Image (cartoon, rainbow, N blue to C red):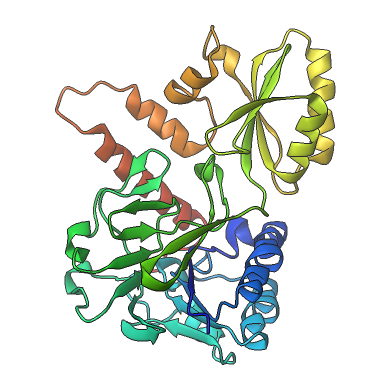
Length: 372
């Protein structure tokens, strides 16, 4: 019998104001890659580490029914167990997890197991402590009698998003006696010693730009495989010059020169922005831009960023590392803080971390995600 266990996290179904096209894109990963992988490899146990949905108190009814008939039901039909931790986005209230999306909407499925309180389970040879979102970290004590911890933790000094480290939360050292810790919550895949943040299984925003996505497979003797997502669209950046067009984000840490026809192919299947370096012939650029818009990927318009107003001598690597005129709010905050001079001894990383948390809170408030 195959005792391999699959770990994934932070699916955030219903993101982008319950966009149906985004939802279909998310499900395509499961339909076209994830579910076939489980069947082909005889996987019988899946652990989802929380934040299954995005909006904590307002789930679109169409999306809810689609999740029931096309996601949860699949596990019953294929006799595969899905264990799901309650994450902070799954909870209706911020100060308790008793009212949550998962507990209320999965009772009819025999192979869906929801964890809204700590519990240790046995899967194959592994004893796994299942730890949902912890509202009050002062009340938490690390389980002792387990091989693995699966949680939805906020931990200090892990990447929250590209180039932004978390400041606050648990110290990783409290888990030093546990063989492996898998956690959801942060969307960037990372590992420090025995602690693994699985990250999201697909790119959700430009904060995921140039980040590898997928899921983990735990085998015998703590051996791990990482399965890359090869299905869903990426958030890419096109760089336009009268003489050359380049693209970054298709392959991690790689920028490639492409033709205009290739650019159209890329834009038709990915979310795109265009950074204009040099454009002396506006007529030609307008034709090119309109040709991209005609095939552009659903909900996202193609945004134009004029880099000529920022740098005089364009160097792509230096440009990415120093100043990026991107309308992504987090990037703008980072650029602003990096350019500031403080009289006092203030850590810019800490200021950036706090600003990011405030920005995320403001986003939640604007979408009606806050409850007192």
